Image 1 (tube, rainbow, N blue to C red):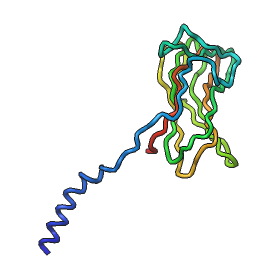
Image 2 (image 1 turned 90 degrees about the horizontal axis):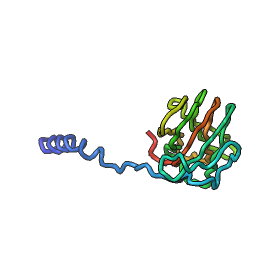
Image 3 (image 1 turned 45 degrees about the vertical axis):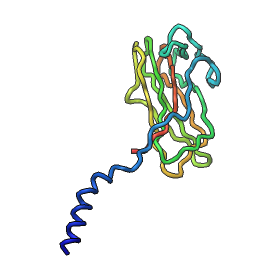
Length: 173
């Protein structure tokens, strides 16, 4: 009996050390868009490549709007991802934005619908320097989007630059 108690006490003592030893999933970039040109950009109206303004020194996309607009940037197909946190991240800079500018991501599930995530909590307005903005989408086990759409929304007017966009796969909380 004494031996059993000692073994149990030892196991209880060691349990906290081993409980946190499982491998944690490390976030990884699954798609990158450096925005060094207009290649692949879906919306061509009011969008231009700007070599003079850039977060990384290689140019950015400049969006000039006079009314509320959703700019469709890219569609990502064939991402084999589920049971994860999918994050759309990019750098934004604004000039004289009346209203808000923010990232928007749509996940399309064939035969099941389309669902979105918006970075409303970190929307930018007015004139700002470069900021990192991101919006997450939490995928349950078995939920695999057929298409992921990456947009910028300006719900007013002004100029927005976007640079260094990426889609990151990480563990769900």
